[in-house]
Image (cartoon, rainbow over all chains, first blue to last red):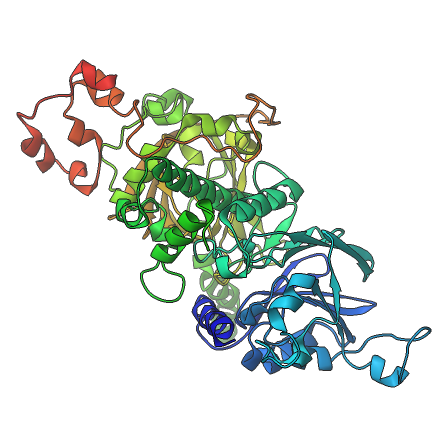
Length: 316
Length: 293
């Protein structure tokens, strides 16, 4: 079980370094009912309104108090829903504390103590998130059970209507992991992408958790298809990445373009019979390294190239 | 009486002194109006009309990553519907055609709040904030126009711009990253305007890239609309991005061959900016016509 926990913690620590370095969380208005909280690990999306508060992802566990304080500056309403875009600890670490700060409206067909059933906000995620955070009975789970999803879905979509707008939770299979969801706030016109899209690093393809390069490209294409810009490549639908700054259409196009071009280069090298070491030596990412590359930390350029290579060859 | 006059003169002086204290927020020179570059299209003409030739990086202080990326660039990229209406970024738009500038004043205080610029190219508009507001945090949205603040330095309007979307140094694939910032100086000489732009890009430039553009004031000038609607020019599978794989771009040799210059000079870099470079390449063999194939 250690082998499942360690990479998640390392990943969380590495990506946390891409956030503002003042150890504080920052709130930034996006549009409509939507705000972005940065500095807590992965970016957090907050939707507020008459029904209460919905958050997408919860950041690192040690930042949960600061995240709650930031949410309080936006709304005094109850936290009703947490949606997890995937299972990594920099996006789910605050689940337990933030869930317990909220509550669920219950009634009707509840078995047991109806009061207990209302404790805590609901945590929604694809079922593969639950699989990655939990463990079979008798084994140590990678994540504390208080932060596990309370409601999961197995299909490609889950729909909510909250604070006067439709909220579309769309599963993207085999992208960053096997449990990724993108969350689309239909009236506010904002997409929260999780780590399928970031501005701070090359796509993180967690092969061990079911991620793949082709799934990442398909998910990026899905985001591109959902966005309607005002003009050219700008405005209209706003995009909150898993890490990094607020974005719109042009930013997602640039990231998709880079990912596809590097996939094509590595694919061509594989066709020529090049080994992984030869591919790395050829530096297929060299033109994008000033933007996304790293020689230190968890997700180095070499790790990315290796993940693309192995993914294209069907290796883990 | 004499004392009263002295006091009255002081009272009169007070609002004047108060106003003078705000002078830095007022425009020193009026830049409002349409500035036409149609009479000066010979100035960097390829940049203003057809676009530069493929593989022409001469005189641009690019690094190796920028060169590699430009070599991979395929002009077919802009046939993709989602790229057809992509606007010129604010550090490039003024290159393309005429601009209109106008001031925005606070009604009550008559303090200059902002100077606006409309570009003919893609109908883009930008705001140069003159009211001393700070730039947003890094995690705010980046745009093609960026976030600009300005100040008067004598009769020169100097502008600093951050929060740019990724753009281009030249329209032949030479990239300019979203980490770049630029400084501009708007210098009016009668009915002529010179715009000097200094681009700093830690990702793709090894030195600041300096560009100047000139305009002529046009009384009664108008700027036409610039609508853009994308169409399917080429039927492609979804997610197909045109690009050249490394080492396969057969067009790169055309520029040095057509102009009879050594191929290495066309590759650009800071060295090619300076006159001394002419001495270095003197005697080097120009590209053969065969290099274009």
